[in-house]
Length: 386
Ligand SMILES: [Zn+2]
Image (cartoon, rainbow, N blue to C red; front, side, top):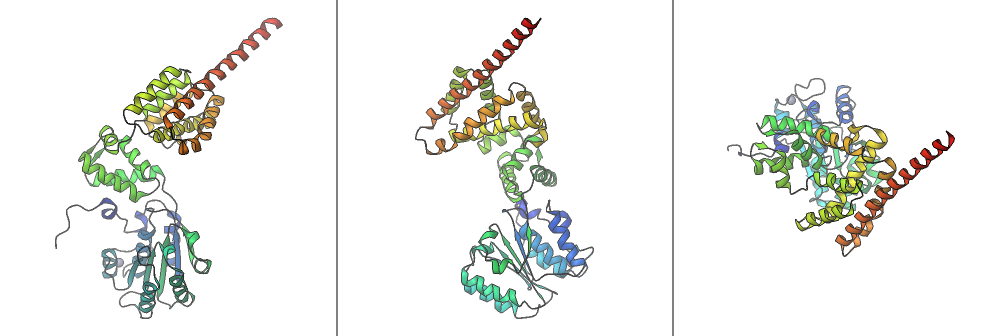
């Protein structure tokens, strides 16, 4: 059978060695050391958000332990055990998705399989994904195996919701909490994937896709694949935004300039223009709140690196921050945050947004007036002293 022409990037570029796993160094190192020192536990619990590498690490671990030419705790990816695990056909490595196989019978099948020695491998592996979905009876059956596991058995339980797993189970596992990936880590991997696929992509687009991945490399790669099918092998920021149907950051900078100038007339007419062109008001609300949060960070820390934004946008924020005092930004953010629940329940979000814009413009004018008044008073004081 020939290979399918198109293979999704998340599968095609799935790491096959610990050293290829993006981030999660703590988990990789600990597992490698366990192999090298032959201190293997019988059950592990990998928790963390979706798409951060839980089952990928589980498979690499299964390979590294059973590899016939294992070196420095890494699998060779060439021997029979390695290649069969990679292809998902190894007779001693089982994967169960507990989201769709959550009942007692599914765990009984594991119980039965666990009774027999491994056929080829040193260790028999059971990788149970989304383990929190198991029923109580299934958990009880699982517990029976975990209480007295045969020497050759290793369980890797993976979950996005560790708090839903009974304590009797978790207390028997060695636990690893995997974390969300940083935007930079995702964008570096995307850059690599793009290069391998001979796709041209600009930095702004790389950044945007990484950000939309929300900490999950798998999700970012999924968006990347869709972008490739839309834009072809040359992804530029403008067509990407069109494809994703996202408003330009520019609209928040413009709105913020109107607010900074206390210019209610232009703030309202600009907002109306956006709304008539199909802008979603909640998206706009979230965007403008994010915008002032970024300004607050720059104003208080003077460190643009803390912003989850591209370099071009960071520079823009640095400039924009100069037009506000930190007091102004704080008061604007307070109004925005306090309005959040009102937005959710409002039957007329448009009016609510307009009145909020009016308030933001007013705050800015008031503070400007106040600071002008203070500096005027100070000048007067100086004058009277001289
Ligand atoms: Zn191998």
